[in-house]
Length: 288
View: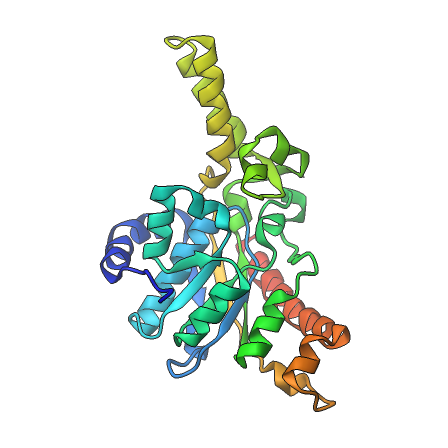
């Protein structure tokens, strides 16, 4: 059984954490009424460095709509499951390590699945690219939807990149920080929160700690700082009408044939990406 979620933990998170997030970041989700309890879905969304805010606001919206039945598992980078405390919390809210096998198990158990195909490549894009949806041409999610015969639900998120502006997205930084590359995190940022929090830690600890301890604490603060918001921006999400990919199958090919058809996969990719981008643009105009 893939599900390790805790209804009690989710209830407490919604009761105590969500009010804080909503007061700081708005956390508005619209369009949940487009989803029906008897249908499984693959929700496909863009995201930014405010992924923790995104995750909890979407969890709250899903629970408000479905009361825990059905369940939606969120595919998350395996990096986060390398740390016991973080792993425990992510399991309790329904996150599972991102893989074809995990998504397949989730669908077999009757769950829906939420995936952010752009991964840390998209999440760590620079501030100048904050309004652009970019999945880096990754199409594995399309194959998952086809294989499990579930509709895709485009999910547009706007505003989460404002909570911690990124200056740089770099593969070199993954090697500089060491831990990311060890856990196969290919891209790493330099963000406003990293600079501010690391500088504060270095300044404060320099008064009472030896230099080696100051450097070590500053290093780890910089490494984890991008996960901590620094600016109270409004974060909005829009659920789009589900898309049945088989309706695009004009040549009546089998599922196995479609999975191997690069032209069909690109058509699906372009349609979903364009749908997400249109709603992103609309919400960004409102946020401004």
